[in-house]
Amino acid sequence: MEGDTFSGLGNGTQIDGKILQTFQKSFVQVQDILDQNRLLINEINQNHESKIPDNLSRNVGLIRELNNNIRRVVDLYSDLSSNFTKNIEVSSEGDSSGALKSDGKAGHKRNRPA
Image 1 (cartoon, rainbow, N blue to C red):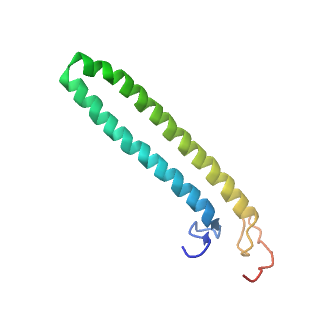
Image 2 (tube, helix red, strand yellow):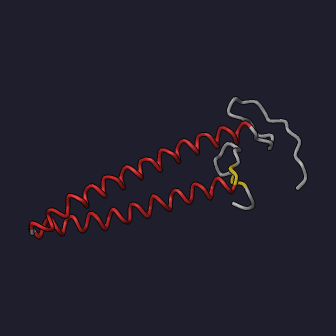
Image 3 (cartoon, helix red, strand yellow):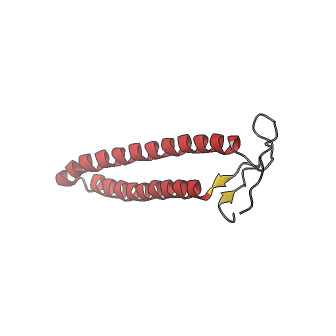
């Protein structure tokens, strides 16, 4: 993975470095939310085991927060999937490497010097 492109998809498709940064940012957001969920689940379990009424009442809000976090993760993964598909389609349409496109036809564009 050197320079601005990544060609490790096995079919000659190249992905711009900016796209990879966007994906990485989304994955970091997902991981942060999952880490927060782990803490919420631990607190919910402790409150449940304590059987203290105030702690059990607090669990209602914690479970709501957990559910909202799960929705956010689903939305992030959905956006990632859509963006990935869209970028792969754009990348394969604009492939200038002469590699075969998904339709089996070779791309014949002139390579410009850097």
